[in-house]
Image 1 (tube, one colour):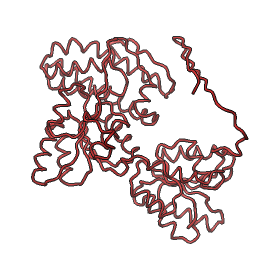
Image 2 (cartoon, helix red, strand yellow):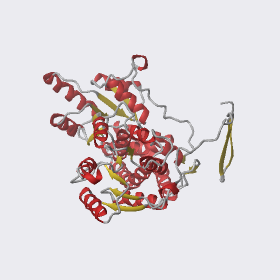
Image 3 (cartoon, rainbow, N blue to C red):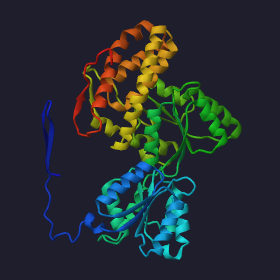
Image 4 (cartoon, rainbow, N blue to C red):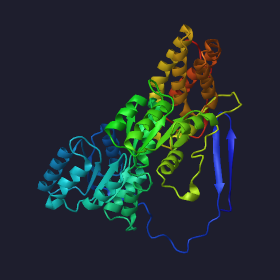
Length: 460
């Protein structure tokens, strides 16, 4: 673009980033901006329907900041009552904002009931969805739902959608563009069985997959995955390689044996923290169709899904499926970069907060189990505890600590308790320092600077 980019950085104070680009001057002023000013929503009456108290509060606070007259209810029945009473009081709502998935009556059921009221056939509707399916797009069009936004909703997207629904925006196509946003991924509508025992990995995969428009069911080990496959129909399986009770390799072999009788074939994509060629070979030899490395990213898992379902163009197919990431680093300096962790989860601040909460809740328990396994010389406990901690650390962007716990896991697998004990002290100090750094960064100040993991005392 004919420009340049640079930064000025000072240790302990932070960094400033600059850029220049060359642009042509506009020939004439823009008549109106894409986003109408929030003042245009003053005194607009909006009904918000969501069964989640936190979501209702966030939406209410956001809308009230724009001087919207907001009413919030927790379900479809309360919403219908409010809509009816607004007709009697001659103070009709001008927009309905509703969640898609709610108990008793979901968003589609609510809108269907509402459209049966003659006075409500044209009320603009904004649907909020945690995950979109192909058939949802048709239902939205049939019910006259003007906009669909994916959760968590961004303020400017919410503002843009509402002003478009009210016809207070210059661009007549804005509503359609917002609606299309939820259905852009070619993975939309894919029903996935996720076999994964780690809660952090479950949370990340769930959020990434639902944002791609997939639906999913979670199995905590290979046994559960096989049972679910016999009971339900799925388009694809995302299979963690290392799980308790029955690992992903064994589960895949059992599934392929079972398919000899059903004459069917369900695509199975391996998920593993290992990056060695032998590991990929083991996965494919067991009958898996794809291979992604942890921590997974939205782009890689989407590419693997499309490849396994044979929906990628021939020129884009890669026989190696998805390339492994390089996770190793020779440097020992341990620095936690919160911005990098945020990037690992697709810039989703709510998901980052959820992951940190889970990490601070779960990791100390697994560290205690690791200590006990080393102290009592139980190699299996050392291996499984270290493996779980490795998975939880994957999204923290700390290759040095991840490498240490991977070595401890390997030593547990080889029954090398003295070797694991020799690494435990450093790993424990690093991990406790990370706990301190995370707690010190909350509430999240999501700025692009690294936080040095402090030395930690043994009594923490």
